[in-house]
Length: 280
Image: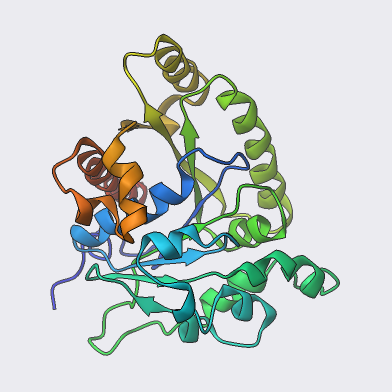
């Protein structure tokens, strides 16, 4: 089998590459980005796993996993009742799988908060995945972790397990304020739990070019974060909003819409950054 675009360009680097999609603010397009970026990466040849760590389970729903099918979820994985492999389900997108979540995750802090390894549960679970699948290739080249909209123990587990953080940022007035708080948390995790953690990039979401404030936010974020901001901007698009109600990523719902095309560009841009990292 031909190597995937990532595995062929990251010789000497860890595979899979683990990206945590994090922002403590809700409604910024974090889950939407996890669903559609995962789909776009799979569409261009990557093997992708989405790990749903949000108790709301919207990433699982948006990828077509009905709640009655979530027999094993990330809750059982974090409590140690099940291996991560037992939770993984294939989606309708070839090359894209998901480890779904349930509302049980709301109680995870009470379950594990007194354990010494409470912040390392996800890292340990990911390390337990088999290094090779039946065809000899890595089972996944990308793992995307969809974090809850808060800086709680679930998000800390994601940051402790990840190689890098991808930050979805809505083009709104308080965008930079929330970003500063997240950056402080990332630095704390890097110092205490995960020295390899970095900011992979910031993706601007829900952009409306007719809105003067949105244009100003884009300019401010690019000035503040420099080249860490992806060139691709995700537009506000009704087809992106409609797709989850059909249990589909927008690329399956309407491939030609502006939202789908933006996520395909973002996936290509991320792979290009990975190649630059590999060459450095």
